[in-house]
Image 1 (cartoon, rainbow, N blue to C red):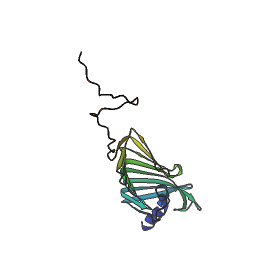
Image 2: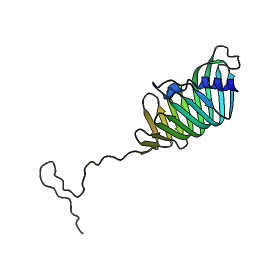
Image 3: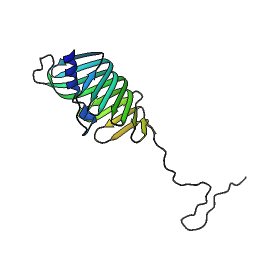
Image 4: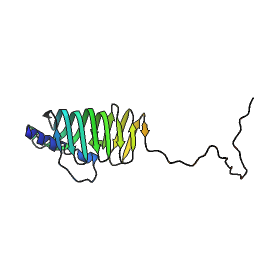
Length: 188
């Protein structure tokens, strides 16, 4: 099992570049209650279940179940071929993704490194603790390298907006220089 954990750490070690751009590189670790892996032609598939925690460079993913697919190279008939590229990861069940001062929670997170995106569904919420903004919606798509978030049926909460100085009781002066007074209600 120790070799499987080490191999999974290597397999998933290609994931951090999706989330991080420039922080100090950290070894990837994966802990779970049960892990299973198999190879089909040149792809290695894995399923991890029960208290799954994946730690890597500037990133932490916790969930109930983690599935992944990675492309293999070299001897594809061996039990655990060397891996070339991570293709896909699916985290489900109480998903929490933390990167720097950002935190995402949802029921399902699809990580698509080839498309440089993460898709969050099942009650997704993204909190940016650094700016005090929270985004929620039906579906949230995070795009790597763009600091861009696309939210379907968006609900955003942020810090208060500065008072812009409007006073509804103060008279306004029109652009033509005449004095205008607030309109008085008329009775019928």
